[in-house]
Length: 502
Image 1 (cartoon, rainbow, N blue to C red):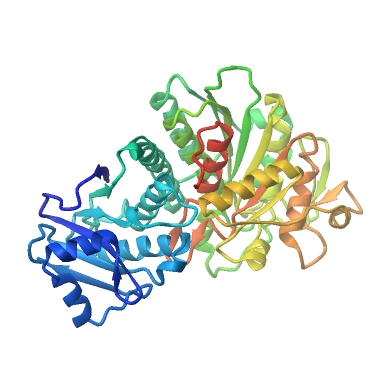
Image 2: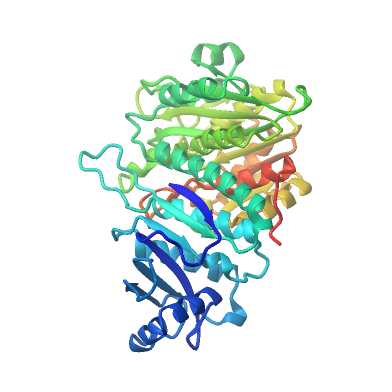
């Protein structure tokens, strides 16, 4: 997709579709009015004839309007002008692409940039638009013989103030980097488990060294290494799989102080989760290929960081393995000594993500991190609590909580804070070991999972993002790329490359 700028209302290109706005009571926007005058009132006459009033979700697609070189005009209803807000803006961008994507239109002149959106400057209008457009035009067809594509290949943003050009160029650069990362995350997440296993993700990680040789270094911790390190919990989860458990470490060093403490992102990478001995039901088990979406998000995040050349030290950890059933599977009732020395009694082998992550938290101490954030499709309980639109956030640090919630608000990657309390931790006490991996309680499962992880993160400023509901969309039937929008916004602020909304 190509994104460019233009200062002319009457473009000379004849193959484009112009997106213009109409508010309630048939009030055309400034550019809409100018085009209407040029058309000798043809546009307004068509609006009246088709009984378009400017309400949200109303639209009218016109062809070959007199005196206007655009082949198409798409008029989108924006609701009441007085109450036009960010949500309305996102809505009309989304609706317009949904209407156009199945047509033969290839180029779009985007005039929504003229709209006055409270608390949204030109940078954010363009960045949000690009992110939505790229998301709406995403197709996963790598494994199809008959591939289908959308025709749109160029978006021309209208800019009336030349002093905005620099800000707009930044918006385009950042949005394209973010969108490319999101696409990669979706592509990896949508791959089947017979292709996307630990070795595949390791191979993809090593490629980053070739793409960004001066910034990224990659190495793996294999099963032999894990055994020497005492990562018994990690190994227990993956030991019945024919695919080797591998932890891929992606190190990005670009801070002016080479030895600056890194921010570490850990992605749960269960490339398939059968549930183990505590086997899942067959209904929707095919969706368990998405249990590695935390790892794919971390992988995509590292690509965006490198593309944007963020002045940070960041380490991405892809904690990958498979949870399968067999004679050598770990069992309910087993007691496993984790790398930290904490003995864990296994109550449910389907609560495997926390068993993998606990050893990863212990391993990363050697990097002396400034902040640790794990991203995991950890609990169905989080889906019950928050549905499929909101990420669950739990943390041991109030400042980090504030920063992540602010990044979520700005990016639109909706996130909700859940508590970690000692009252919950008590229910993880074991009669036979130090702790159990699942509380003997049917409620609060997402919180108990975070409480379990908190035993291994006491020395860190740490946050946990449960993305069990948001990583996969039942509407689009595929990976979403979330919470990548939140995480990159968090890092843009950290690197002081953030642009405020206003």
